[in-house]
Length: 406
Image (tube, rainbow, N blue to C red; front, side, top):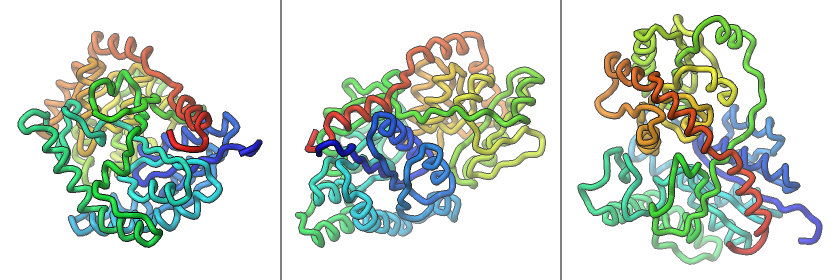
């Protein structure tokens, strides 16, 4: 490659929790002299994130917010979206990856990314932000394919086979149709093909241990954190300064129909403890009149200044709160969220509120535990173990092997 810089295409389709870590990796790559470009959904906040990091963005597929904020999707909608995303990757990624040395793919089943890399003869890495998507002889706590109940009733390998079939049904027809069009042979197991033999795990080892949790040769880099030095808004600073630390309530980019009642319940539970409330509006567009409401804000600066964080259990929010040493109450809704809730509980840095749906009484009890001195002490001690160099570790791996296969 001579003196030309390594060029890496970073791609994902998903919520902010899928995109922001890629922006963190892009920033780390740029800091080491490489070039990075993002191929992610065209949502306004993702455009803003890429601009903040000084990384070009190539739009990929429909805006995520338009999908999750619309009517509840049907099975037919899922098949249509899967076909659309595969088709888009074969077109958009093929063009965006021209001149690149590697493609890093993550987010919602990135079927098509490896195939584009294979056709171009460049390196491909599939990255996961949690253990949920990695085949395992036993699932991580709180997670089974397709549902959020503890493992144990059925042989896990059978369940993983069923999960592989589900992925084949969703993505297989479109993937193999487009592979045939560019001269590639059919794929029998889409999930394993996308993961490859050596996927990366972009998650903190304390929060998400991988030892013995999968049959694959996983490379755990640590979480990809985008450094944030933005100051807090003046009115938020003033709110924080005039009283005891508030309880933060936020449900990120969950669809509006999911968290509305939960948010109100969380607010009333915090008020039962005599706590002020700081509410993150998020994609649900929550705006009760009796709370201090914030839009997108620097959580890295905010979380050390709140008493507790009540949230949905996204990987990013969980990691940021853990880094801050702030107790958490996790109300998981879908996907990997039950896993993170269980890890928070197991580590003693907060409470997992799973079934049944939360009430003011049950959330108030959870907050009693989260606000206790014991939980606070455990959260602060755990914060010292959370790594912050994951994006740099991953960037160096890409630069060390800027061409060829792992």
